[in-house]
Image (cartoon, rainbow, N blue to C red; front, side):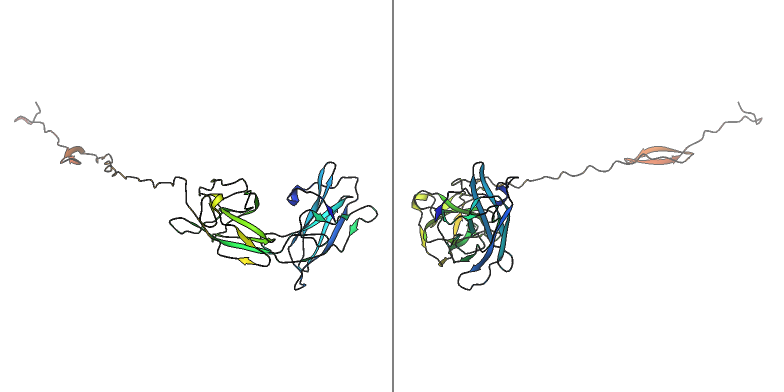
Length: 286
């Protein structure tokens, strides 16, 4: 076995193969060790350390368990079969090791660019799961961080977020002792989500946390938490509606021969009065 220290990289951040190198590949099949059935959609990654950094690539298995990591440069690779949150399998390294950094290198070269038969038979891990709720309301909390911690140093081993039902789970864990931290991120007991940090079983400080001892294939359920909301809640805005002023009366227009006059606060149209000329007895106007 050969040990190589690697960084944790997302597949999209891995360095590309140099332009002058032969683009090779690593392929194989992933199965369940107990049932021998293929494991679909499982992540397999190949990493290599070079003078300019880390290079490699990742691929997911097909329905029949086959995978191919293409576009690899001429290097010696660590191949890791990565357990993720939806799979309760231990992470495995070629050839059959379940210990981080302990692996047999897989060489891709110009003489043998396509390496096949790099298979894995996966074993179950331990699982820890539970529900996170809000103190006082009992409401299930979604999108709140939960961390799996090393009991002595508080080192974050894994972190996740609760789903829409407030559920979380850490799967594929090797035998060991763990502390669960609620509203706890990889940077510590941060309260960016407005909830106070809590540790299992119901304490607010890490020193008082209760470690959980598990070993595969054990499944621990009901490791629940309850955290208090610490940010000011938005207060409802009260709006007072003032009565509308009475509608203004539209200017009234009178027909020809009528005039406007205010009577009882209202404008009315009254017939105009015409003056009469007085005549003398001779029928002539004065």
